[in-house]
Image: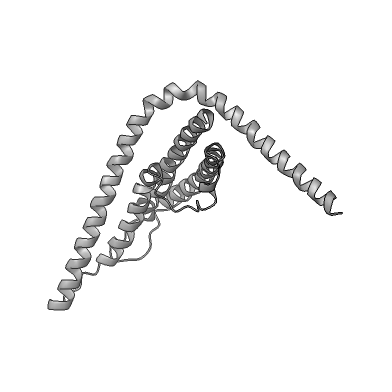
Length: 200
C-alpha cells in the first residue's frame, strides 16, 4: 500500500513538472518573438515608474509635514486641522499604488526565500517564473474589478460624507492604475527570469 501511494505521488509530481516545462517552453517562444519590443518599451516604463516613485516620496513627505503641523497646532495653540486625517488616508493609498511596481522591480516586496535559496539557480528561476505569472494573472483580475467599481462610482457620483467630500472615483482610480503597472512589471519579471532559466 505504501509503495502504491509513493508511486502515485511520483506520478503526480512528474505530471506537474511536465506541465510546467511545457508552459515554460511555450512562453519561451513568445519571449523570443517579443524581446525586441520589450527592450524598446523597458526604458520608457522604467522612467514612468521612477517618476511615480518620486511622486510617492513627495506625497509621503507632505503627509509627514501636515501631520507634524497638525500636532504642533493642536498641542500649542489648540487649533486642530480637521482635514489632515482624511488627506493622510488618501495619501497613503496613493503612495502604496504609485510605488508598487517600482518596489517589485527592485525585488523589494516581502517574500519567503528560505527554501528557494537552497535550490539550484535553474529551479529558482523556474519558481520565480511561475510566481510572476500567477502575480500577473491576479493583477489582471483586480484591474478588471477595480476598474468596474471605479467606473460605477464615477457614473453615480458617489462619495463618503466627510469634511472634503471628494467623489469616490477620484480616490479609487489609483487602484486599477497601480495594478496595471504591477501587471506590466510582473510580465517583465517573467521575461527576466526566463532569460536566467534559459542561460542556466
